[in-house]
View (cartoon, rainbow, N blue to C red):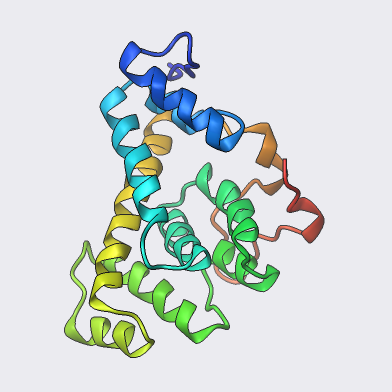
Length: 198
């Protein structure tokens, strides 16, 4: 049975203000938030977390590295297309956008250290070693930013898990950027022409 896709008129009362705020800031209500609206507490926490992560000391591109790394490792077919577009809008170059879709090494050493630290936390359930943290700090990041990565992963855990259980349908704005986790040695390519802003 499909999860309902709510709007401001059909959602539970406690979720409506969050949907309205999303529409004002984003120009639309993505299907993720429409699904989350069935659980107003989840939607409220996700919305607050997203806004809080935007206020961290990580740059816009660095925040997208965290988000897209989580999307890749959690195999979120809904989130990867959206963050392909959002990473471009944040200023990531095409090579970085593509590498994140493939789950491959980033050419920028700082970004790669961030990707590796994020990936380690996800795959090891938060059990980063002293060496893992040291590599992250040696790339120029701080203790504060290590904790900010935890926030980014928490936000993506909410969205990735929601989409997994709900089978959230992809929005028309990003259908040209559709994604499936590539097999080893294959590609998940999106052309520059596909990276259109809606």
